[in-house]
Length: 429
Length: 104
Image (cartoon, rainbow over all chains, first blue to last red; front, side, top):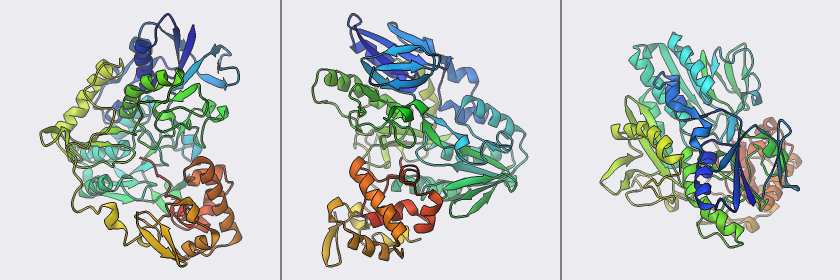
């Protein structure tokens, strides 16, 4: 009997369990998944939870109900990987031997990594919405808040769901308008990026959307610490942004055992081949948010990866070159408030572009443009997540990015047109 | 990919002027690139640049400010002092490396 062990039953790990079980014969492969948490959260729901828009029971389900028969669930968290012995050691001392390992332990918010963040102001005037509990705390805070300076902040990239803080800013604008108190609230968006988003076309659209809503942007802001007395964010280049309510996305880090295993980078993200997801240990793959691949940390990415991983895995154990390869495909719905949303679709090479999806012209969804249908798409996606995505059922979307229906706006310079004004005006300022 | 002439040589750069060929760089060119962005190189600047070059050769990607701090041992605060305002971009530019993908 060969043993496949999956670490983590979040989005990536759960899809992996379901898809791999279908492909690996039960008489030859024993499968185990390790997870500490009793409940699996639909994480995009946290954002809505914070604004009172979704109920806890809609976004949580018991982990075991989402796993297929023939996969053993072991409760626990990983203390150490003994790679020489091909053994996982859990915090309670239990050991799990493996032949192949899939790391799907994701990333976690780490407010302890920024001085002043998880001190006396935490849960008082500093909040977050990246865990179930913090989203509920924030809901209570927003419900009773009388207004002032709201600062929405990203500590450092990469973060899970890089559009979530933008969505938070859009939804906050809409929330305070609905409550007829928008005039009592100033909203500032503070980011380490040079603009609203990393990729030029989307950055310009999303930047305009912030401007239209009267949301100030403080860019290239690398936070050094939070001054608890002055209630302000302080950057390494000594800029200060004062707040009455700070909603921050703390530094996101991979699991500590990854750091200790020698497979991780400085953020404990598993360093993998970006097309095959194999780590430098040839019996260990990593998927989902846990890897260092240069694409979004998002559920859609985990889904697209898992459309390919079973084949990549089978080729690998047969000693063959992988035929299928991951192209960094990511897709996300962006809530923009007032019952509208946008859709972004991109990969390692192609940035998010306007157009229609999945069909040219007909759509029905519009890319990089606000519409009501995109918003409904996002809401309906919650059902698709539980019913289709996690169980690994067929979803009519390609694992690879398609350029059908996409167009590059004429006003945006193509790379070759951008060459003249080279580096100087980009970095000198 | 566009070509620029610097110190009488032709070098391959991307649309923002970052070198695209690792081997076209040497320290003379690094000094010239630093001049373009008004950075005066000291021994300490060169230590950072040499770390970035070696780390890139190892891993095939440009180190982030966090990595230059935790692995290279140059505190972020010092990186801001040496390469003001946008250290990650400026260090990569002088070192002749691709802009660190600020991620997505």
